[in-house]
Image 1 (cartoon, rainbow, N blue to C red):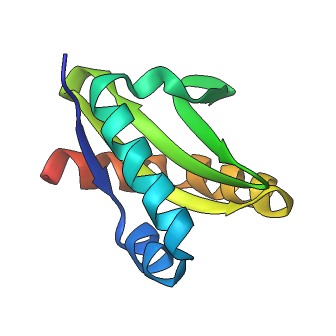
Image 2 (cartoon, rainbow, N blue to C red; image 1 turned 180 degrees about the horizontal axis):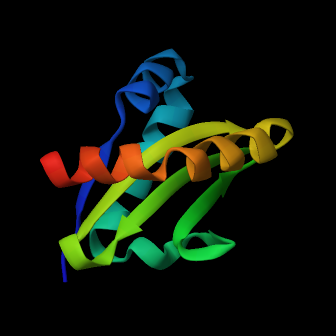
Length: 101
């Protein structure tokens, strides 16, 4: 089953500031997520995952019932807990975003 991959506006802004190799890696991960969104490591919940690149992580949410993935953040290991907390606090907002696309 093929999934559609989307990203938040905030993530898109972060993406534009990244190094070229980081952008290329993220583009490869997007292709992977279309085929298998469960490639990353689960974060507390099966549908909230991260994919690791060196000391940075790409965070995304899987909406199995909609066949969609929403990329929500990219940050360093140091920022990990702050990002996880922020994502969990904004789940309703992310759900509205993914349902509108």
